[in-house]
Image 1 (cartoon, rainbow, N blue to C red):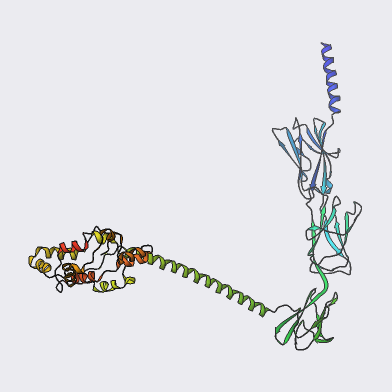
Image 2: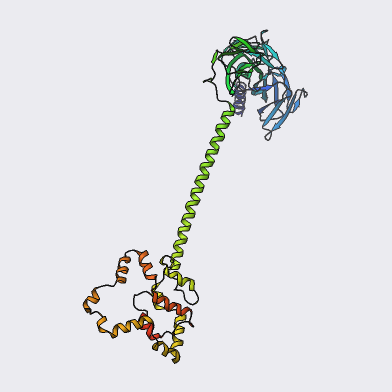
Length: 501
């Protein structure tokens, strides 16, 4: 039994030695001055946990805090963590904080307090500043200082011009830590377009970068040019145009080395040659243009605004005229096409119109003029005789009193044909074979006109004198003799032959 007690005592002593030699975890914490900072420690017993400051000042025992105005405690994660909060941290709170569990250090925190700096520009006596705007001179080196005071730890400084890294010589002077001053000097030559100059801090963890900015007014001497134009036919306009900051306060326009005007614009006569130039000045400097020789018609002069406006108007009118001509030609082409198409349709429709009958006496009289007679569909004319003709023939056939006079009283032409037939001496002898081979004059004309559609149609549309008489009798039934249907068929056929009516 005593042996067991001795071994337990040895193990307890060894465990105490091991715990005493345990190295605690260490972490670095940074707090912004005037803010709260919380430190969290892993523990095994709440009652036996102790917080120490710089290993000499006990801040708490368990959940009891000894200085509640400066610190606060809370337990987290089912009593496995204890958090110590430093309230409104200042420089006196900077140091080592340790957490002990059952008399053994478990974790240590090194707390650092950061203080932001105050920034400002300092300019030499030669630089003038008004309402935050700094006057600098173009082409002259400018020295500007940026001073950061009161920072903890000391900050770094950098320069920017219009948001870009400044080009120039930078010298930085860091003072001792107890003075907490950082000075940076920038020497650079301003450009005409520079607008802002900025100094920016860096090198702190929880303090955001600070920036001080100043507006730049870059001043430069005038840069002038003399503009010459003809406003009228007998005078020149001289305009002295200058770029400067500040604007020029003195102008001079000279004609033949004599001061013509102290304004920046003047009109002179163009009737005689002259040598002209101008100058201007401000607080930075002055500039004079090169002399220009003027004759009666100055070749190098720019075109005046009136001439330019006239040229533009002429070009616009020319474009409008061209557009109108194009539109007119297009409409004319379309109208011509429509007229041609209309005539084609009229011709096609006219070819299907039957011969005039009844009271259309005017159209029958126009048939004597081949050019005025419309094209006739011959197939329809041959196959379909007019209703008036059929009516009259039918009525004549049914009335014997009308049919017999028609047969008893032949026409004058039939009488002549009968007389010629009764006298054999007047009838020439003809070979039947030659009768078939020798065409008549009408056939010759039809054959010659067959190759030409216009001639063929005109030949086929022109009625003979006898046909005219017959048509005349048809239009006026009471004035002419009755027509025998058999005689009509014997003379004109039954509509199957190819001769035109």
